[in-house]
Image (cartoon, rainbow over the protein chains, first blue to last red):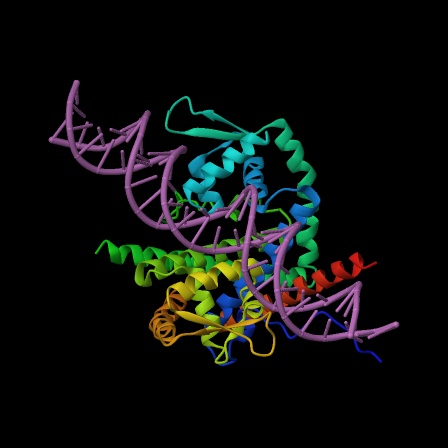
Length: 174
Length: 174
DNA sequence: CGCAATCATTTTAAGCTTAAAATAATTCCG
DNA sequence: CGGAATTATTTTAAGCTTAAAATGATTGCG
């Protein structure tokens, strides 16, 4: 009978609704967004099910793991690309959980420096290989060549967006 | 002396922190996420400054604009890739604003069908050309060929993620 | 029919996120 | 030195988002 119940119910996400002759830029943007949402949803669910942690907390731990000397609130805000007020709450919750610690900066009393605690390092080390495996699985359908091409094209997107940003700022300044 | 030209403050986002020999999959994912965040931030700021509307509301209006017969809550949830409970609140707020209307489905009393009001249609029509221009500007650094390539590669990513998803679900079912 | 299963939506509680205003510390410069 | 400007962070209010549980309606089927 072959009636393959099969996953695909004719995909009904944001970008699938576009007409084929819509603007290329818009199509690329919506497809990019769809991909990001799909992957993010996957990782979020995995982190919750396997480690009872949220994605923003995991992301914050990941940044600290790469920074042996810790990071300031502002550096975290830049790296995670979220507002500074957001970081305050996130850090508060992770401190309560005992995964990170904050210490006032000795040289500048406005700053504080945030670091992984040993417990936080252990927790992150347990998560990161699993996380990496998930990502590998999600990209399993692409060859290394395709990924390399994608990396290049995405670099251009990033560059393009950032230069559009600075053009706009220049305009504002007159 | 060649001392690093350029304004670029040595970019400090999530993916810029990766070592060059890190896993390719992870690098692609983080760069994809960076691009999505940058674009989304831009559009969000534009919508707020120019039209005093939030991105989720705009996205919801955009879906309804493409659906002359309106959409159910569940269809909105699928298309916007957010939880169903989320849609409830979003729709409530847009109804209060008078931009959309909801009517109970005559055939199924569980469902309701949501549509743009004339005011909502007018509001959306005013926003969409501006929105499209922003997107065009953000992608101005890519040729049409590059965008076409990107579209293809992102289709592969989407496909890959979705098939990883169904493999996983199959495992769960035994 | 009748009732179990499924389905569409809402509710709830917790957490995330933002923009804007407030607070506090440092730097700039006359 | 001293005040203005800048910088780092927190606070606030509103809104977004999720997962899970609850509610209510429809469907499937014995």
